[in-house]
Structures are given as C-alpha cells and as structure tokens.
Amino acid sequence: MQNKAYNILNNRLTIRISQSFMSFSVINPSSAVGIEYEPYAVKNGISIAANLREAFNESSLLGMGFSKVQVMIDTPVLLVPIEEFDESQKELLYSHAFTRLGNDIIVHTILPNENAVALYPLNKDLNLVINDHFDDIRIIPLMQPVWSYMHKRSFSGNRAKLYAYFHDHRVEVFSFRQNRFKFYNHYKVVTPYDASYFILYVWKQLAMDAQNDELHIFGSISDKEILTEDLKKYLQNVYAINPEAEFNRAPITKIKGLPMDISLLVLKGR
Image (tube, rainbow, N blue to C red; front, side, top):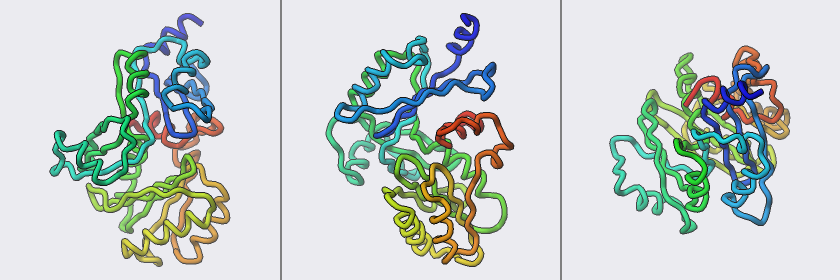
C-alpha cells in the first residue's frame, strides 16, 4: 500500500471545481480503471473556498499530501484571438464582457491550436487555499480538454459541425472554422426543450445547413431521448457521442458519474 501511495503521489492531482460539484482524481496505472476518482458534494451556504478547505479534512485523496495539482475551473470564459491578447489589459477586457463579483483575479490560458486565449475569473480565497496546499500549480478552464479534443475531431469529414457539451446544469455550445473558434457560448439548462431552443438558435445564427451539417451532443444529458427527438425534427444529422464507443471501451468510461471533461483530460490531455 505504501508503494502504491508513493507512486500515486508522483503524479499530478486534478481538482475539478464547479459551483455545485467538486471532484478529485489522479492517474493510477495500477487501478483497473486507470485513475483514482473521488467526487465531493459541495455544501450549500458556504463558499467554494470554504468547501475546499473542509475537503482537505474529509477527502482521502487530498489527505495524501500531493505537491502537484491541476485545477479545472468552471467559471465564465471570454475567448480572445491570440494576436489581439494583451496581458496587461485582461482585467479590463474581462470586466467589459462579464459582471464581476469583486473578489476574484482574472487568469488566462493560451489555447495555441485554436489561436485563442481563455480569460476567466478565479476567486481570491480559493486561490489562497490552493496555494496553501500545493507547490506546483496549473490552472485551466474546465472546457480546455473538451475544446482541444473536439477541435481535432472537427477536421474529420467535409461537413460543418456544431458541438454541445452538457455538464453542471449547463450546455456549452461551440464550433470551429479551421484553427479558430467560430462560436462559443454557454446556457443554463432546466429542461431538454431549453437546450433544444439554445442549440437551434445558434444553428440558425451560424447559418448552418439543416440537411448536410452535423450536430454532436455529449456529456451529462438529462432526457437525452426527448432532446434528440426534438432536435431531429429540424436537423438531419444529430449524433450523441457515447464515451465508451468514442474511446474504444477504455476502462475509465466505466466510472459512473465521471464528467467527460475529466475522461478527455486523462485520455487525450489538455
């Protein structure tokens, strides 16, 4: 057991943080599914930073003493063309696009393959907790491995593609044109008809072809059959991405409740 723990500690812990859900995971080649994965229920009424502080007293993975961490942050993202990015202006630029709560810093992640820079807020108290517990820290937007994989996937075939990723009661809708984002936005989803409305609105906005172009939906989709049926009333080519089939039945896809963004991060990288 000591050797197993030691080997795991040499790897980088991944902390996934959203407003309603938190999880901890680390690659473990000796595990049957390839990783150790630990979901953590976020407590209402206290901040995310306070939740993470408490998790250090409750989580077996956090209690192991990792020094290296990768934190996936689920906050609103502003995408800036890489050639127009000025780091000294990122706070101002983000404040023009989104309402800020005042207790955050704006961090950025370069997306070289998509020729963009992602700007997103990180709560100052949360940042302090992370820095108090880890020496080697990477911060990335939760969507980065999703964008990266689907961008590569978008080059297959000749049809234009729109992607819709469902997670944490939201749908993230995006599309690419060669090596750039053509569109990206996210919407809160309560019912499958909400999702259908937003997706079809984007489809129309991008002037996509209902007979020839493709829509790919994936992630944690509530009432998938209802959503798919509704979308197929208007679009000819609607595909639901199945992780097991997509990743050749990789053992990690058998973990119940594992968000697809973590699967992509482990299997395909950032």
